[in-house]
Length: 538
View 1 (spheres, rainbow, N blue to C red):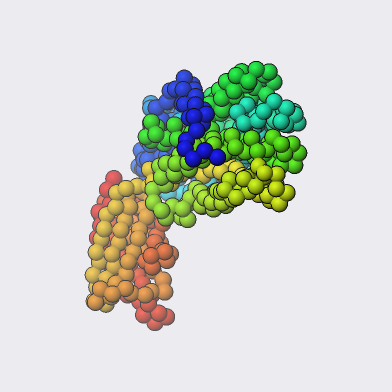
View 2 (view 1 turned 30 degrees about the vertical axis):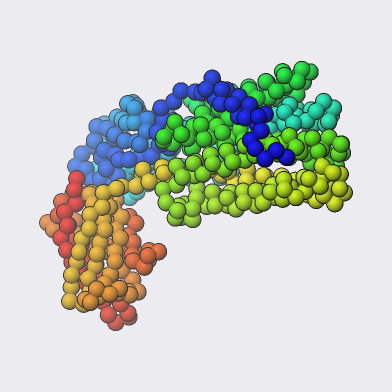
């Protein structure tokens, strides 16, 4: 095996980059959309019905629907929606009844993923909080995961297999590979088609029984997801053409374009491709998808060669190992870039669903790299000399690689249902106000975010009079307006990971001066209390 970077591998990579430049879809997205703020603020109590609700998002969005649900659960859709870049305005009907109203909305972000949510406000006085958001549709989520998994499995293996046959296998090396790969690619095209319907269900927040609706399919085929599906279908078609071409140059050219189209499809939609800076993330997604296809597409043919035409195995292993010297480092580098963009901190690997999926994928990738290293450095030389033991173990380790790939695809398909930490950070209020409360035997440090009327998050650290940590069995926070117009409300705090206490949803109905009272039960007989005035903004 050559120690330097092979010229053939360089030509393949350069060809991919040329295809990238020719096929690159224009876009100007920033990140996965998140609700930044609303007018009126979530949880507001208003003297009269507002004319409209204004929703501010972190990036441009397109509205799908909005409905208004009162405290008795009655929903009405006679609202009008207008979109202006990253702002959605919902004009409300006149004569709404008093009490709590919840506006449930659904929009499509630039990465083609639907984003749903709800904001509540009360007219006159709060009157119950309806559950306006749709319950998670487990069957639809399974369908979303399954469609992504099956598309990845069939197209990456099929397009990558066609690429392997064009660049690494000789004529007649694997006569059975053509029909098998064509079957994979045809199945992949069918899964791409079905995914349009599943996407349309998700866009409209509908159950699986509404799949036959024409509107569902039209909405699924719109936007960047529809463009990505078209590119995937074209990639599968060109890969089939490559497998049928008689001229070696035609086989290589069409398989290379098919691989580039598959990379462009991955880079045209999704969480990673829409994250800034897109001059970095979109090429990284393109390279990552193409290199995954090159690796995954080689596993099936190589496994077949270890069991059958062993005379051709040595040449195929030699050619593929030279390409792997370039594609595997690019695969790892692009993966590191994408992970660093999507994560906001190392803690996200365990603290978020997205990070936990990534952690599982990283473990599987380490196993895959270990197997590939054993194959490349130890088993491949022996298999090239037709050593029976090396051939037997090479077949087993390639099979283990295929199992690891199935696990990686299963994990990665779960990202479709989990917003990345970067998007979650955008939706988290950045404004925090601190309050220091002092007493004879206890002190408390409060961090309140966003410190305005509506829902607030409160973090509490308790200290002794000597500034040491104070242990408490339970902590509550009570709030009451200084003018006495509203009765006090009490919120129980829960223990936070850092040893403090958190109130995750303290509702302040109206802005103004409020009295905050902290009560800490030290034991069954001892309670410390602190009180402080705080001004909550509008």
